[in-house]
Image (cartoon, rainbow, N blue to C red):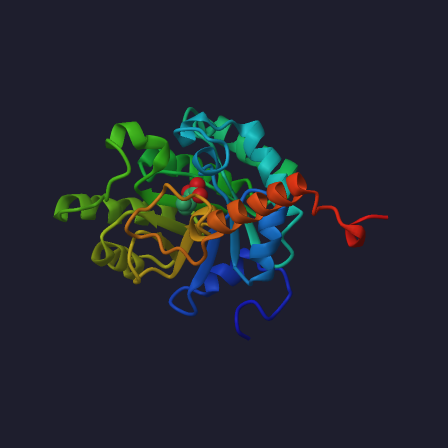
Length: 271
Ligand code: KIV
């Protein structure tokens, strides 16, 4: 069965079974409207990413997003997904401080949004302990390595990570640690293609790349970016599949012009 043609909701097992097979497709979307469009287009996973800070909330970093905001967006996106598996990002400070925090907050996200999984950033022993506890709670966890936006200040900006042998070996070790802690997949962000391919071959769970070359088991893009709605954002890895920002401006301009000229509403748009 080709992806997108079977309406049965995807499960974690379906996602994991795609390791090394047909590439997984994930988009970051934050509400019912865009989750529905993505779901109908046949994506495998919708991620309610904390990238919503930068793309739709007008904030300068993901550190500014709260748990309540993620729950609101997660519950909204849930209403747009029929087949796609819904993953919700855990925001900064909700899983790093203690294992208890991680369990309670991840549990809340699952309970209050209806998501099927959560995503946590980082691969240190400390984060892996939280991942293990959350997985033991029965909550599937997606990891996130390479450039981890919640550490943007410590990393000195959105830069390619794992360059050089030592850094690449550390990334590989983190990926294996997350796999060992029970993560069902791992996002690799801003990682050299050769390193991402090595990690992908070394772990049994699917890797989902963004700015990590074609060797991963799947790809993720942020929906407003790929649609050309987030026009100022032009990293090398991003391919824009539409220019909806320009199309939206033109449509609103037409509405304004016709309203001012009296051409709208005409008889066919009146009762
Ligand atoms: O927040 C987000 O949208 C993400 C993806 C870019 C992986 O973490």
